[in-house]
Image (cartoon, rainbow, N blue to C red; front, side, top):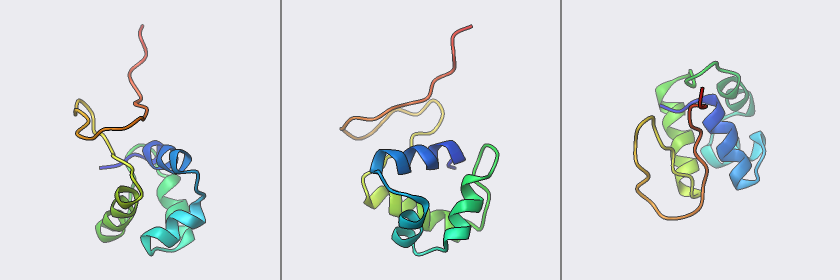
Amino acid sequence: MMTSAQMRAARALLGIDQKQLAELAGVSLPTVQRMEASDGNVRGVIDTLIKVVAALDRAGIELIGDDAASQARGRGVRLKEPKT
């Protein structure tokens, strides 16, 4: 699973736009735009989602799920729940 916020953050960390991500993943620009417009978890065809996740991985992005530890080294950011 990947959230639309993770997808946008991954692009920001890589310094690429939606068009460049689409090219890296071998999908269309409107597909990336629709995926990023999703609320919460990205919606779309599983094969397409796999292509995008694989492209981000090749580019150096590690997607970290809820309550999962990071397995790699390097700098990054993680969204945490705000303190109340």
